[in-house]
Image 1 (cartoon, rainbow, N blue to C red):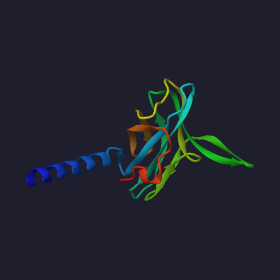
Image 2 (cartoon, rainbow, N blue to C red):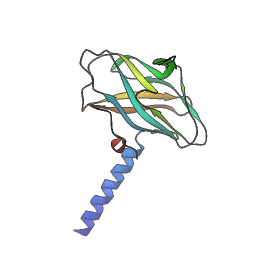
Image 3 (tube, helix red, strand yellow):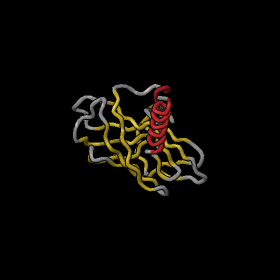
Length: 155
């Protein structure tokens, strides 16, 4: 009985370890990718996540794409006078030893001309391309509401 419990615990631990490294490319870890469920007639949506660079050299996020949208762009928000506006960017630096947040009101991946609505509870693929680390395919969770800091999925 003890051996079975120990084996089950070991198996659960090893599964957790595998899941924790699934979203890693080179020294970059992509954590807690999510998108918000929106009404069916919404033609665009945003994807948020955190990129943690555990390496000694910086990298850059240079592209993103998904089969669920006609186009994906890297975006940030900038202040223009008294108004915050979304702006397309060509790339985003991921400095060595830091975390870069992709969050509402800040950096994000914008999806245009969605092929179908994103419903809460489903997942969809997103490919991120980094200048040095290369491409990684991740799964984005579609949530009804933004995750709380406690439930943000940090490993």
